[in-house]
Image 1 (cartoon, rainbow, N blue to C red):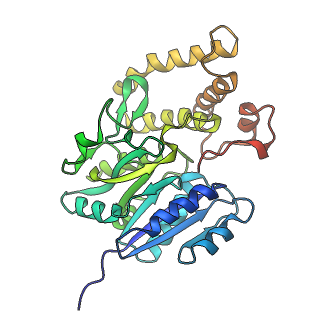
Image 2 (cartoon, rainbow, N blue to C red):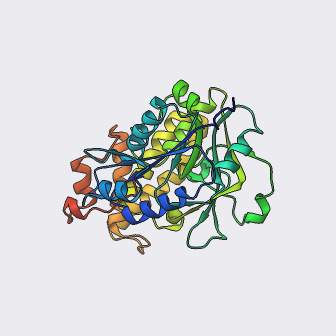
Image 3 (cartoon, rainbow, N blue to C red):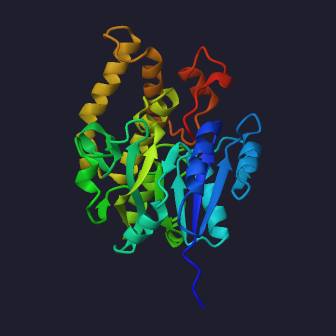
Length: 325
């Protein structure tokens, strides 16, 4: 009796991003791999978007949530569903990503060649400028306290013919992981809400012997790759990088970031006071500084109402921008 192909559950989130989600699902529908289940977690979108998705793609599982759980919480809902329904692998996929038809085939072929596989990502290209690589090998840049997602100047032809190689982190835009690793090591840390969460998960599983890999002949196109960070993402990136460093870097490494962090804080305080030639708006500086404040005050998960009012003093909640989560 022929064994059924390895089962893959693809988890993607929708939060008021219907156009992107429908385009993403259209590309997923063209995947050539035969055993894929697609799960959309709707994070309390408006205008009956979950119903629209269900009607457009009747074979997709739509899991409706009563509030926006963020990237981490929403993904965890989808991951739990996948595990409960027997998936061998789970793939996290951003709703603003477009997959190539052979993506799953290439990823599975790639991970079959490596050992201690904990997570894997394809090469991620900018949707609007397809020759631009936005992810090829993630590393933590201690000097600037940030994740660096690709080497400067790297070209697709430089990496596409390589064998699978290790990276410090897979990329949450498209991340494939064995279900057993999620069962053993746990799901995404919901304190992060969004951003740096996959870096935390990859660091966590690496401590238990699992590696993250890049499969360079697998490709995904990402619309969000080249976008300028908004105010909420600026806040979350700032808060979460501090949390990530505290829990994943020894003190002797963290202190190498302190000169840059101090300079960043001073510059944005000066910007708020009108003492600098503004490269960023005062709202941007306020969001960044609030990220530091909430980190030191231990305020994680989704931002609270107080933080929301500080970042957006003149905007009603309904106008607050989407963070693509």
